[in-house]
Length: 239
Image (cartoon, rainbow, N blue to C red; front, side, top):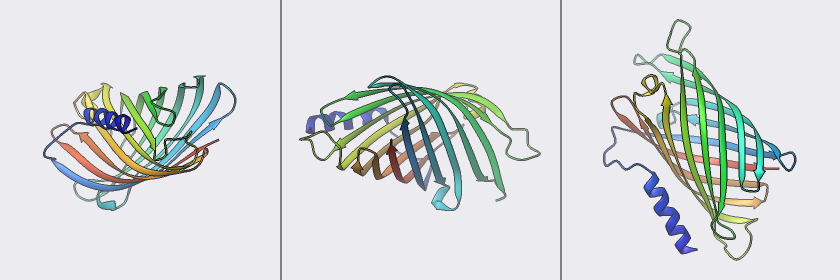
């Protein structure tokens, strides 16, 4: 178990970008609900809702709603297509409130890898078609872009002597975002952002997990970058 955990830490350390100095440091709070619903041997659905604050938890910056239809090719391979709506509140240089809506169509493929009887590693590849609206009724700054995301997440139970159905666990994940179309409208770079995350959680049953963790979000901008220090509370339900 110790060797598996060490390998995971090395993997996620390698995936996460390293910067000695941050151009802009921020702090925020995120809350999320992730639900998975199985209909039959091959079909199911997923839904997640996320609420993200602005810097220093000044106001609610993002509301994200993301449903999908899932197809289970096998026990460890899952495909999905879905839609996402993201409402983004912001502030202009003068302090005025701004709002930009975004709609996404997305496709993904998940591979679940068993590292031991109780430790699993999930690989997720997601392609997003992003339709970003204008920031105001008089603005003409809408655009379309595509983004590719690779996500890896490991769940390590504290108990390793049985199949994990209940008890505390440690979660470790990393996600890399890259712009594959129209990057000049996003940040002028192929690399978009990275999210490294570690959390402690508790599995109440096969159907319900709760976790609390820290996320380091590194976002590349046109001429600078931002490091966002995030405390996240997440709920996972499975039926």
